[in-house]
Length: 332
Ligand SMILES: Nc1ncnc2c1ncn2[C@@H]1O[C@H](COP(=O)(O)OP(=O)(O)OP(=O)(O)O)[C@@H](O)[C@H]1O
Image (cartoon, rainbow, N blue to C red):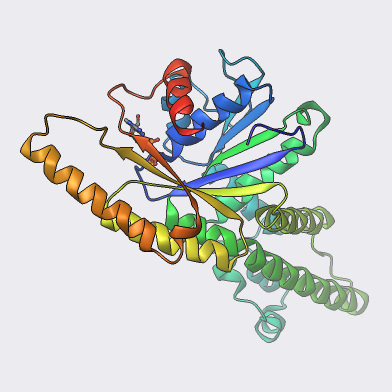
């Protein structure tokens, strides 16, 4: 994972509470300690990266993390802000959406006829996973800038499973939806210029709104391509050794493969370390864990992945030294 200097992206995902953030942060520290200028990104509104690094990383900009050998920056993106950006990109002339705009121009009937896309739904109730998608596309904007093109490793601490799955298919959904909005705008623009020439009415979509939509659409296409790029991207599933978590990881793995997202590694985290004196509770726990680990070996999806077993450690994984300690165990 540390070899080569071409830019690589690692996305860590899995069920809530399994250790995604700890594993992502420890991987980022590992990369930075092996000479890679590294960026670690989280779209988790709970600011779990700040907790992991025991440093305030909030604010939506890149914050340097002290300690590792090479530059390590962290970015906690606020999904709400990302969603607002989407809304403003599709907002027109102050109205709440294209419908208001059309009504405002006495074209409400035309809107009904043209209504190819349930625009209100897209604008008023953005689809789940939208914020992660836009947050990831914002990261790509950062990375395209001169200032931040030095990073050779990018680690994403993604949202819990459900969102991530929707996130993966979302760029396609957005690409099509934005395409329809742009086509609809085109029709409005030609319809309004026709009206303008007859009635001299003012009011056409602000050109910058269309530009913003075009930019957003291009970014969505880039996010979708990033997810599927087997040379530069890898999705790592993090789980814990319980039957429920393993079953959910199997579903996640199947969905990722269906979306052509490269998955090679599975981390089974928080495994009870070997012990000679097991109390009744630990003996039961260990039995459950070994049953769950056997499930992995027999699972059609998970058995083909490289299994990394990470022990439950007796220290709180907070701060760069603890993350380095976990990283030395997990990312051998
Ligand atoms: N191998 C481990 N040994 C001991 N504690 C661990 C281990 N991995 C994670 N933890 C602890 O478990 C808790 C949850 O870890 P973390 O926040 O990384 O999980 P997460 O999957 O990112 O959670 P969320 O879905 O809430 O973001 C944290 O207190 C973390 O320190």
